[in-house]
Length: 69
Image (tube, rainbow, N blue to C red; front, side, top):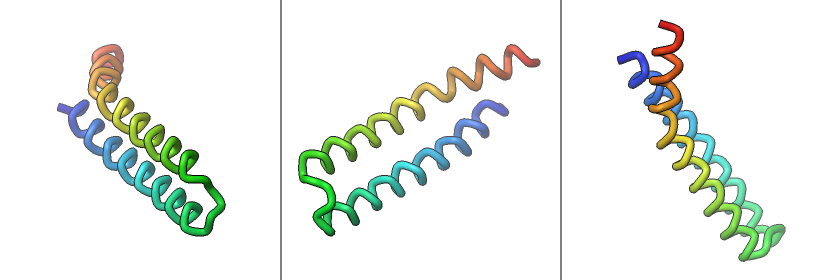
């Protein structure tokens, strides 16, 4: 049960972080500081990294709580 709560809390932090990165990229795109390809690539990378971490978190937390319990 603690692993579930830790995963939810960390997932919220990850979602907020990825959302902030995308907002910054959108601002840079609207100012013309980032090309369309770079904007698209960075947005996709941020999203994929966030999803990968969010998917792997339950397994990592489960191992950590099992190891220290």
